[in-house]
Amino acid sequence: MGERIKKLKKIRIHREGTSELLYSAIIIIIISCGLWYLFQAFSPLAGHIVMPFVCGIFASVWLMMLNFYRCPIRYFNGDTERTVVAPADGKIVVIEEVDENDYFHDRRQMVSIFMSPLNVHANWFPVDGRVKFVKHFDGNYHKAWLPKASEENEHADIMIETPEGEDILVRQIAGAMARRIVTYAKADEDCYIDQHLGFIKLGSRVDVFLPLNSKVCVTMDQPTTGDQTVIAKLH
View (cartoon, rainbow, N blue to C red):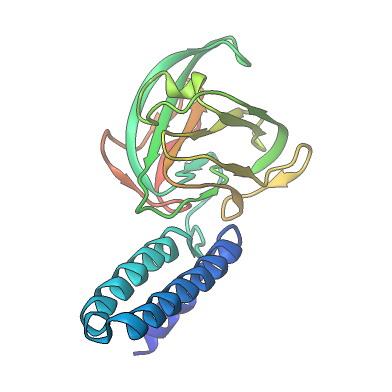
């Protein structure tokens, strides 16, 4: 029982969802009360049959929203030196060498994590370091797992310099369903593994661009846990 209580204390609701959950609950209550009043006025018997199903649907939708805005409290227990952890929950959809011509103008190893609507959507800093800049770009809303999504979709770029002097680019990407990228990272501020980098609503993707000599520690389709799964080691 004690362990169960400890686990429950590690789950909280992300601040991005508190107002939406509150307003949606109020709307659901108002609609449910209105429907109950109409059924009572015109067809009480039908109301007793239909309302449990209606309330069940509303409750299911609200619980899905609640699940979406989960924000577990996590701490990385390993050595953070030259360590790159997963910035998001999801699964690995891309591991490849790419030409990064916007900032590095050379080849990089790109590791991409796709987040489904059922995943936690908080994003964590993948490395310790200092934020060099944060840039937001408007764009399209292709399906997040498509290769062109990395460059053509709406996205936010966060460049982090590690204590060893390596530059790591993190890219938050909006997907076909996602319509809001929130980035907490600020230029010229120190950042650490365990800190939240941002939040993406309704499923999307996060790309991490690494030096070519990095040792990738994950495989394709491998599930990841944000702030816990080691995705690479820097040399």
